[in-house]
Amino acid sequence: MAKANAKFMAPLTPSAELAVIVGSAALPRTEVVKKMWDYIKKNGLQDAKNKRMINADDKLAAIFEGKKQISMFDMSKYISKHLSK
Image (cartoon, rainbow, N blue to C red; front, side, top):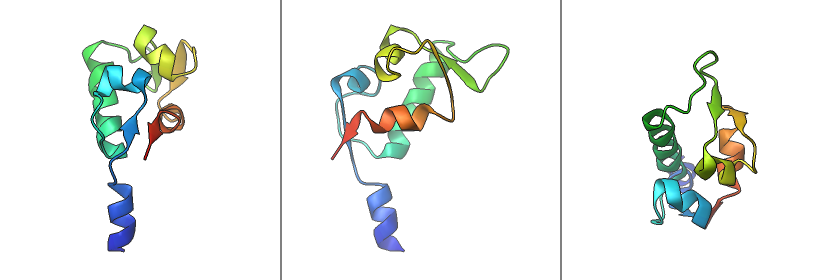
């Protein structure tokens, strides 16, 4: 079980687009998601009517493949494409 946990917490390097939001240091996926939510909340990017939707500004649109709005459930799919070992 410890091995699965270690892999889950393994630091991953963010792409240049993602580094604009979370920084360029290697971070575990959980920390990347936390920093993304901090950014979204700080900039008021959660949809006012439907809190499950995220409205992308220019920085987030670069990560979300140019989409202006995504579901919070899809966010990890887009983040995964911007993380590498």
